[in-house]
Length: 532
Image (cartoon, rainbow, N blue to C red; front, side, top):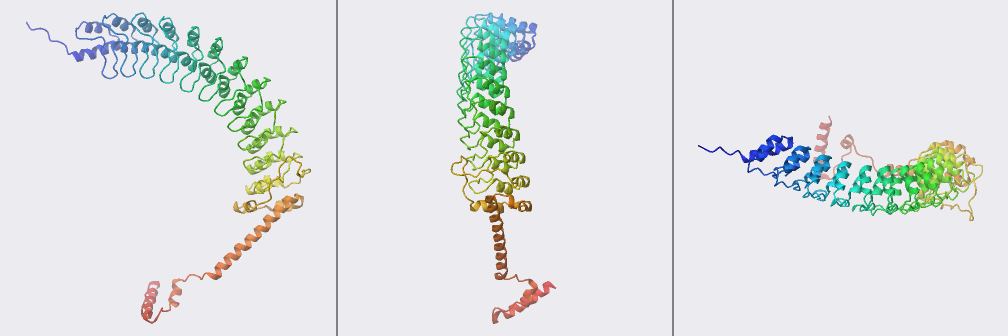
């Protein structure tokens, strides 16, 4: 009698993997009885064993069936990502499957995957599966501080980034967990990430640890947790940090040298600015390293009127500090941006200098407003008694000339109105006087195709002597240039002969010599035929 034929081994293996994935326990038991079926075989695409496929699919009953096999290996990872069955249980949050694996002594909970270097606890932390994390932390041989190989982030740091409070609480309950361990790329600690992302609950948990360091800075930007909270605008977290006595509110970052108050002024967060200014140890005049702007200058340049109001309430505020990059005061920044409300607040103070020249262009706030065409700002500045509208820039131009050159006629008309009290600058004044008018300053109106409207001439007598002289010189120079241009074209008309037209060539084509007379006559005849 013939023996029964053996089944196709390759077909049985594929059928075995499919049965495991879909949870067909009866078929799996039948296939396992075959002597040539290996329970640790891998598929050819992902390199996953039956245990990995069962963990991916969440087949808890199939996991128990496979773990009963004597030759089963629960630590074999797949070949694509290097993830073990326990890692897949942590990724998908299958608490029962994780419990099946952790009940075995031969399962290593600290194995790292090949792609990201995450452990099972790291995956549970980054996915927010607190029950699986709790099971893992109950293992005696678990190491809760293993970082991944991508960014060097521990499970606590991963939980802090995404704001998983329960997992953070489970980790912080252990004494062997270091709450200050930062990542490799950037050096941010869990507290920095939680402060930046706005996870208030995680911040409170971290601050409850006695060994927490709330004032350390990261290695990339040099920002403390307070700076990260201020940059992101998280008021409550900033308040929690400022309530501690070991947090320095004047600590500048290493990237641009900006303090917490400077960042709050940049983003325009009035609540955080108020919190910071309530502390007497906060310096409201601290300038940054990169631009040298004070918090008041930043708020004025960004148009944050509420922040400006809060800063001006401080008695130790200085309103005339210029930045180190462009040499511009807060009033100059506000005038350039056209923020009339901020200009009005600054001009309400007697110690505000309305005639301060910047170092970038040599412009006063009035010049900046006139150049940009901000009529309301020009009007506010022109009402100051100590304003000098006749100050010249390095090219010898006043605010009126700048307004005319940019064709801001309404601003120029406003600047031609008489001013009741204009101080005359002298050697004892703090207001520097610009140089005399240069060639570029006088010719600029013509190069920009600008003109002086007749309305200015009608109010000529009300102008200051300096402005009258500049306007007269501009008009005289325009007349001289017009005469020169006319004379040039007249000269060209008399020296260059007019072009000879074809019909003129018929009557004015003398032969070059006697030899060419016949050829010339023939040429004239042919041209006359063509024209006819």
